[in-house]
Image (cartoon, rainbow, N blue to C red; front, side):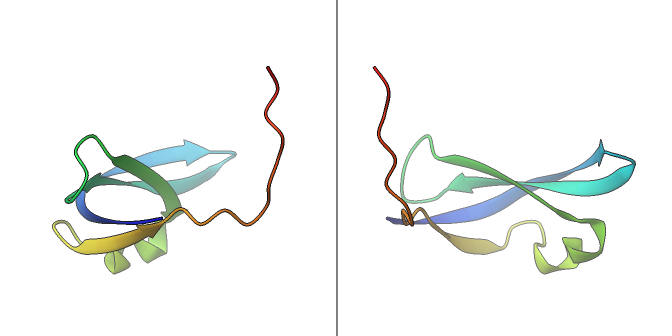
Length: 67
């Protein structure tokens, strides 16, 4: 499944003595879709505020769900 999303914010995150950027995206064609990804601080320019992206939720592996 693929969804269109727009970058709505950035947040600096410290994890294991390294600094990352949490990129926050919100769906444009599906109400309620919110996505957060962690990237290296140097890659922040690839995700400017207001830019759009396609989020692909393709499943690569099937795992049984426990009841």
